[in-house]
Image 1: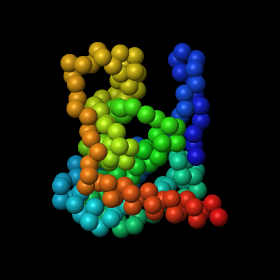
Image 2: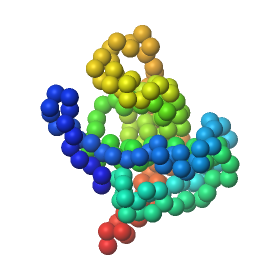
Image 3: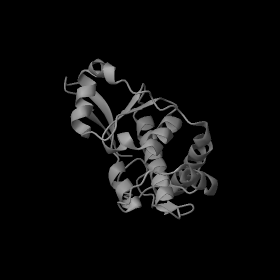
Length: 184
């Protein structure tokens, strides 16, 4: 399921899950990234417009499953919301596979994606600290080394969103059904 053990800078083991969420998001949205409006989100939730794994079936937490839509989004904002939810749910699966715990820090391009942060918080039941669109790797390393150095720039965590819980449960149930069917 694309998990492995890497080595930390101090030589210890660290569980790792690989998933190319940014690549899949870009491909799903065809590069037409817009901030979903509340109306876009309402239409996605109302229609149950879900992307199901996997756009690249050889990688990520559900290898072998082929990509599909339950209901294809009609507008760019809807597509961006559904794609953000899909990637967040896939990331939540990756975090679950490696037994991750504690706060979730998101930086880089997804750090500015509010729909992604809201669904990730909802799917994991944990706060998500999102830090804009900075250079991912550099800031990520800095946060791991000295997270308290950024206390003056404290960002309130995104918390689980009750209105997204049913969507997350439905997505998981659909994916588990597909996963179980593939295993037969």
